[in-house]
Amino acid sequence: MLTLQDLTKTYRTRVGQVKALEGVNLEIDKGEFVVACGPSGSGKTTLLMMVAAMLRPSAGVVRFDGRDVYEMAVPDRARFRADNIGFVFQMFHLVPYLNVRENILVAGGAVGRIDKGRAEELIQQLGLQHRASHRPAELSAGEKQRTAIARALLNRPKLILADEPTGNLDPENARSVLRYLHDFQRAGGTVIVATHGPAARQFATRTIYLRDGMVKA
Image (cartoon, rainbow, N blue to C red):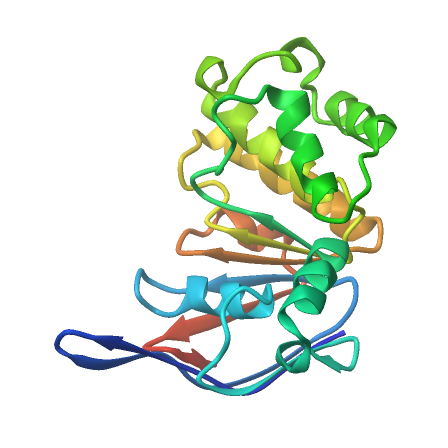
């Protein structure tokens, strides 16, 4: 499903060039739940952003179902991402002036398909029915993250990428979020979770370790 070949990302800073990733090679099959572990600064977020077709690598190739993601024109890549990939962020990234239902439906705008029935289904599945008309400021951290997961699932993606999805949650809500991601994987989806904590590993089919921008055994 996903092939990363010699993936490298270098950032230019005021003090010179910094390599966030260096020569990463990785194969991820459909239906895997991969946990990418590593300390802050190890390259986890950069890796997810490049897999998500959001950040062009300095060198190397990202292939999704055999297609080179970064050979696509920018509009085609955006549509490909919206159709195939859901992203869950640590800081939720909800639109503050939209309610839960509207925040979920935002993902439909990216593909020109506003599926209200699908949104209601996800609201029920993620236990948000009593909060559907509430804005983010009125939600708990767990409710915000469940809203973000519902948004990521709206377009029925093949792949969910989650960047420290439990970092702002208490242990109970963290387990709940990981179970929702596990349910998606058990239903045939593929999940990659980037984290520096151990909680996600119990759901992993495979764990990889990043340090200094490289995958370590």
